[in-house]
Length: 72
Image (cartoon, rainbow, N blue to C red; front, side, top):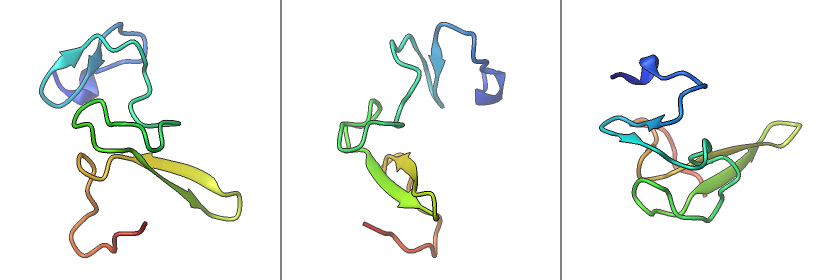
């Protein structure tokens, strides 16, 4: 099953290589400094724009594109 086949109403969460019955639908949002559910690397958070909207990501599972600067 592909990621595109996943829908919001399914019970199981779908990742690249497996299906998990995760209790939470949020893999990174709101989880700054907590371990990633996939690799245990601490989740990062960055505020962006005039409204200071938050972006959350795992620096190991979601690395920057080649040539993009890495920000703290």
